[in-house]
Length: 117
Image 1: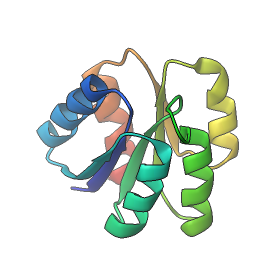
Image 2: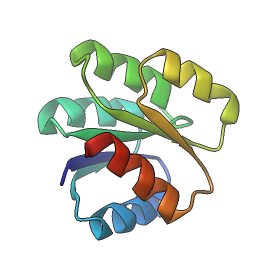
Image 3: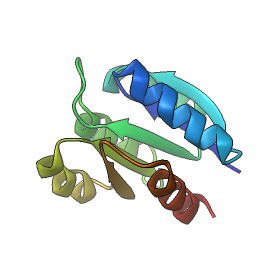
Image 4: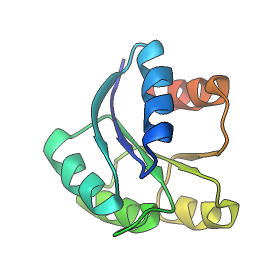
C-alpha cells in the first residue's frame, strides 16, 4: 500500500479522503490546507502519491502540482476538484488523474488503486 499526502482546504474533504484511503489500507503521510503547505510537506514526506484540490487559498493545486513536478518529475498526483474547467490544465502540468467533487468512494478507490498498484 502507498503513503499518501492529502492537500485540500476543506476539512470535510480531507476527512472523507482519509477515511476512504485508510479503508483501502493506505497510510496518510500528512494533510495540508493549501498548495504552499502541500509543496513543503511533499518535499519533507516524499509520499507515493499526493491528492491536490485545485481551488485553494495561498497557492492553488495547479501551482503546487507544477512545483511538485519540478521537484520530482515522477511524482504521482491526483487532482480533486469541483472546477471541471481546470482539469485539462492539471493534466497538462502532469497530474496522473483527476476526480471530480462530489466524489464516490468507489471512484476514489479505483483511481488510487490504478495508480499505486
